[in-house]
Image (cartoon, rainbow, N blue to C red; front, side):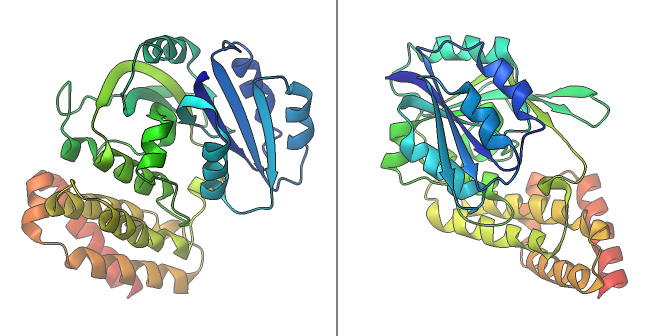
Length: 303
């Protein structure tokens, strides 16, 4: 059995795959399985991956169904004790990842390992995102407020399958939905201060292209809340407050006026349902006031 399966959904990634493959080739072939799930690419992605195929590298093709479906497919096909989900247009921090793979080899029942990662902008400037914002070992309700991106988290496969944890097919908030359900069910969570991932913020990517779909963050969090048993209601209200306000900041970048109005209406109506005490308990007053003013400006402008 492999120690780790790295699962990579691919969609028209020919520009980025060569650099990522160069990194992947530096990992131990006996310990690491690499699974590319091609989500219906129509560029040269398939040919690039096929040239790199070897015993520990799998190529799986599926009709275009979205990243959640591709990740779930990779999870089911994986043979590693642990699974690690990354994006095809990002890169690894090999030193940190190798160190954590070695650490995982001696672990038996660790459910979730959360590491640090780097944000890299279009000018190639980067900073490390620190997970330890609360304490060295955050409680579950505190961990829920960490960044939900998959690239700095490693999960035990059996634990995911036993708890029926998969990526939810929603257009926005897929990572958040998965992370909340994973944290909720986990018995053993550990944190490390090594950066293992480089997350690139690219213009015109799916994550920076905005339309009415951003209102689906409501569906994403509601689904996670319905599936979770140990994360309390107050924490979920704080999560909603944070992420709904964050999605509101994207409204000016939506091109269609009717879609702008739709998003503002959906999100502001949902925010108004959140008890103020839950927001106050989890935000400092300055942030709370700024969010309130921004929301009122958007309501005045678009409704």
